Amino acid sequence: DQQVKQNSPSLSVQEGRISILNCDYTNSMFDYFLWYKKYPAEGPTFLISISSIKDKNEDGRFTVFLNKSAKHLSLHIVPSQPGDSAVYFCAARISNFGNEKLTFGTGTRLTIIP
Amino acid sequence: DAGVTQSPTHLIKTRGQHVTLRCSPISGHKSVSWYQQVLGQGPQFIFQYYEKEERGRGNFPDRFSARQFPNYSSELNVNALLLGDSALYLCASKTRDSSYEQYFGPGTRLTVT
Image (cartoon, rainbow over all chains, first blue to last red; front, top):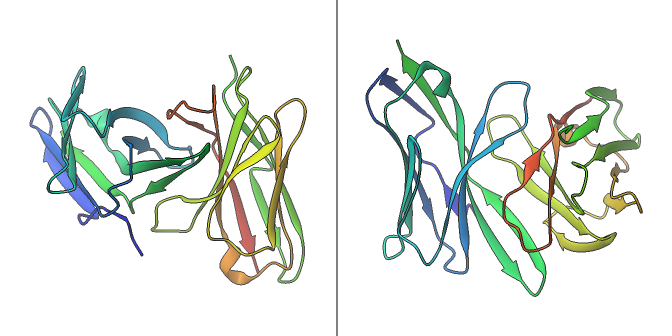
């Protein structure tokens, strides 16, 4: 039961252009959505998050959009830089009476072409 | 400040053996979570501990257990290892129970032969 899905295993984007990474979810009880970036041989690094009551959150070059009716979120990176090449994971949090867990998607490998 | 540290970095075990993985959270972080990442997949939640109490458990068999110590470090134990337990085991810490932002360690790569 894959509650968080990233349907694009890989994405290549020209340096300076916009990168758009997509994520779909099925569970309406998720209260926070997060994006993590992972380089080889390192743990995931937190990038940006959005509450389920918001539809947009921006942090520098990174913007996350949430469409609750479509159960879809996306991460926009503008402009894309070579250092952005990494695997990006979408994650969703569910919190229930002090118990909480993050559910991750399978990741999208982003390659920025110089 | 040091980030989340995990030991060992790599480990090779034989089927049926037992393994203990260790995690030290960022100083001041009282919550520790464990994740299993199989090649080609996203991290799968195993456990969350806060103030030495278990606060969440994922869909893993009872062969998996964990504990948190008074200094907030944590151990993940796996008994009767199977080939399918081969994975990267990630530890993450955060500041308080309700905070959503977790900081991950580099992981322990476990290979079961």
